[in-house]
Image (cartoon, rainbow, N blue to C red; front, side, top):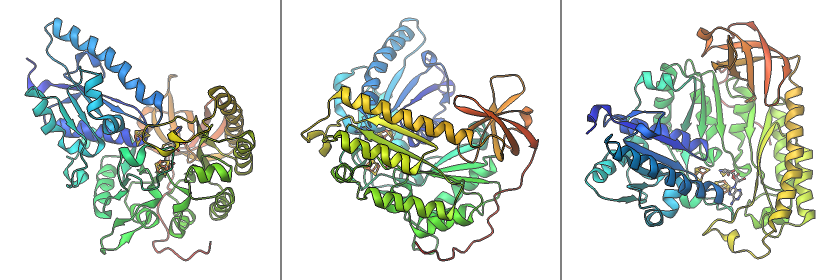
Length: 470
Ligand code: SAH
Ligand code: SF4
Ligand code: F3S
């Protein structure tokens, strides 16, 4: 038997940034039971797959991975090296629950995203031989019940961190599983978020990305008892010493309110980058998707955003081959991309998801047609990304140095526009924000020269949002 103090956990993360955040929270909860993280799955006493259900491919990956893990577990047992418990967490767990137990007898625990604070109890039950399925949406506050990471642990995780402020979605786009897997939209109270952000800053974190499936729909309770929007929350977080960079993702075009635009105008620490998915350009398809905005609504909104923050870089998500999409509809997607111009983007072939309205729609688009459209769209988006990166050559910018690069003496940092930038710099500068001159571009990153090893950015000048007419 392994000494309980030496138990090891391996967490494999799929899907979005919220799963990355959640995986760390699971590791924190397990630390209270003596589990330490390991990078080697074969030596783990507990393996957790934190899964994603967004497209069929993502969900199916889980089952093939479970087959591989079963072999590792059997080899560990046969070699007299102890047992290996196996848990499936995340959105596949929430969506498929019992079905996973049926399809994969190797699994000991299945638990959804709202149960992570209960993980130590679930593990006790699994240790007693139960096969545990926990997919309820509990009444208690998950976040308030999750243990806090030790300072050293947070520090090791790096100088840029995620912080979930909102979870779930009430928008019900007809293609999307998220409202079912993450539940109804819920916002954490301001005080809880501020306390977590302060702990991150004390541990040396310089950049925080606020997360939510609909992060700009944030409406958490403020210290005054009133609901605060995301803009107001950003103003409050910008006051925290050491947090020099703020970001947020993912936003919905319907929820960009005035206070958030004011934050983009007035907060130096709010980075000039906005992920604002449009999904498609055709009004007919947008309606069938239940996106609740039109082509023109979106383009008008982008104009306002660029007005208040001219250097903002935009990023988006696109779906091609949604049921009923004709060549003409697809051309509208190409048109909106040309009109808006994106610094980066994610694009996907529509994948029918069980239980969502679009899966039952007639006129599903043939796979070969969807693939061909995706190819054309990605050509255009890649070209826009290259153009955006090239536009930074010869400029100077601030850079948060995050980690060592592959070459000797090289560090990799992040630009305000989320670009990876390579520079020659010594290791002790990791965690510093420096000024660099951009010399040239590679395939997916920039190369620069450091011209100053410290900058002083990020102190908000305005605490009170002034009015803004939109
Ligand atoms: N909360 C985010 C989206 C989360 S899912 C938002 O509202 O924008 C991330 C992206 O996956 C979506 O923006 C969409 O482009 C894509 N996606 C979601 N469901 C999909 C499906 N059924 N098929 C293909 N892509 C999908
Ligand atoms: Fe899914 Fe739409 Fe909600 Fe985004 S807004 S999570 S795409 S239902
Ligand atoms: Fe995937 Fe769930 Fe995130 S379905 S994209 S892991 S919210």
